Image (tube, rainbow, N blue to C red):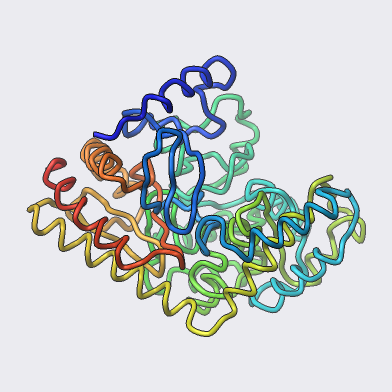
Length: 429
């Protein structure tokens, strides 16, 4: 077992100053147990902790590091950007260039507004949808996580599911009542809700590929059904592509599946690993955003030059021919290796994979909704996780999060992962 004594000491200090010793709940390892490594640095597909332990990293800062850690082109542009100034609270040419790249790539986006996080993006998109439609209700799906704004924490996945929180304390009932819920992939329930309350619904917001209950792809026709029912009722369709945007394809899940929403929320990759978010859509909708229209949203650090510079470099690398084919092949290769390791260990698991995202579910069948995902054996996943960590493979510390492959991963990483997985699956049976 790898020693993490220095990490343990730092965590004890952190408990004095940070709630739970962390700045985001899943980092506390509450769902998997053991000592969380305190990260020192990353290079390519690997992380090192303060104790000197090296890990193959499949978290990738929860998705944005599609080029890997400290990609030389990103590092160079950040160094140059820092020399010019880290923040201005004023428009820069970098914002315009990144906006051009985003609008050119994402089918639904004619205009875009940059913000600082995925939470800001989804919160702002919903405000905009309510203003555009003159309605109040929002339909979301059980297990889909859209950030921690008050109205969207109803049956959220991700860290809320990891910690078994009912939703969140501090959210007024009057806020939650405006949120309608349906099971993910349940088109019949969606149609029933619209039959009864369609005139009240401003928007449907969905992760087109759910990645916060573990990875759960949409059933065939589900996204198109959402497009059709919202169009008929006059509601807007919002794709939360904070994770899938520029991850599944250059145009995100909407290009991958051929279903175009009215508004799209982005984050993660478009900042090259720095804090960023964005929302965008048709020009007629976006023209309601201040200063042009009456929907107020602002942020001093929005369009931060450091994040814009890193994002531009990242998106330009992703324009290279064959990038997404390579990512798809690597994701599929890792999934096959994990399935073979599970069979060798006679462990009952299923590996769900799409593109460069995947999840190992300790379940007999791949889940199609949140209830099925929650039936996966989280205790077995925790045992599996701890053995993998000690073998130098860093996985998401939760059954309800996705793994990510980057362009920096090599076949040697997958070989090391498969060897560790055979032992870990055996220990988790």
